[in-house]
Structure formats: C-alpha cells, structure tokens
Length: 242
Image (cartoon, rainbow, N blue to C red; front, side, top):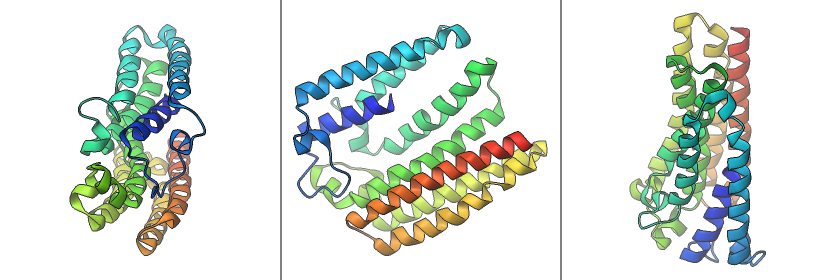
C-alpha cells in the first residue's frame, strides 16, 4: 500500500504540475520521463491488486471486518493526492500519517494476533504515528516555497517556517514523553529506552534548522528515517524486556 501510495503521488502530482523544475526533493519517475503516465497507472493497479490479495490472507486471523480496513486504505491512498479535495493539498497529511502509519499498522498488527484492542495499543499506535509524521514534516519544511507556488497548503505553508521547525521538534519530544504512559504498568524499559531516541531527534532538528532551506535538507530525510527506526527498536525492545 505504501508503494501504491507513492506511485499515486508521483502520477497525480505530475498531472497537477506540482512537480516543478525547481523541485528540491528526490526525483519523481513521471516528471523525469522515466515512465509514462499510462504505464504508471498500470503500475498502481498492479501493486494495489497484489496488496489486496496479500492482505486478504489476514482475514483468516482477523475476520471479515479487515476488508473494511483494506478498502479504507485503498480509498485514502487516492484521496491523499486526487479528487476534488486532495487532502495533502489542504493540510490534512499529518492526520493521515497518524492514522495510516500509526493506528492501522501498529494497532492492526496487534489486533490480528490477539483479536483485542486496549489502551496500551492506542498509546503505542499514537506514539509511532507521531514519530513517523516527522518525516512528512521534513518534506513539507523543505518544499514550503514550492508548495506555496503550487497551491499546496500544507500546515507549514499555512503557519510558516518557524512553526514547521518547532512542529518537528515537538513531535519527537511528545512521542518520547508519551512513552512514560507505560510506567503505570511498571514497564520501565518501555518508558525509558526511547529517551535515547530523543537525543538524536534533537540533534537532527538542530541540523535541520541550521540548513534552513534547499536540497541539503534531503540529508535530514535520511537522519529522520534512522531516528524513526531507532524509536521503533527501542520501544519494541523495552516492551519485550518489560
């Protein structure tokens, strides 16, 4: 589904003219002429079919209600960039990250194994969603000027560069502080291990603010991805040891 969503973004941002010559992010296939829009449409269809067939194997464990989850994932993969009210163009991208990179994968993974949902799952899903959103914030922080020209009203376009930089910082710190929730069950490792993550997060934030603009911000994408992986490892390891 993530591959399909990236293909959809690639195609429809190209068709909308959002992938301009002054694009600062990684190159896109359609805008570079590496693949035709027609071929990309076939690629989207193929990947979606594979994703749905693969996901359908979970019905044996989680029940038919997972069909609804899958259909919602497919629908919002398109609504993110397409339709009369493309969500990413109107500042809803961060909310979708919380849902589809937090609650759906984290909570969904737990549910198909346990057929249960509890407060700890809700908190863990939210925390992971907050950390993953730092990656979207870096993208939007880097592209704020190009997005403004293209009519893409992300949160950072709406509220400005300084807001975007502190949003990035706040997301990582909030996720770390949120791990203290697990102290209520005396899961000390799960609560304290992620403190190691926030050190790297703050260092990356300081580097992002110093770079401020331009293609050099692409290096922050790599560091942010590394930090996300570290958070997931630390929280998972903390859960196991607790």
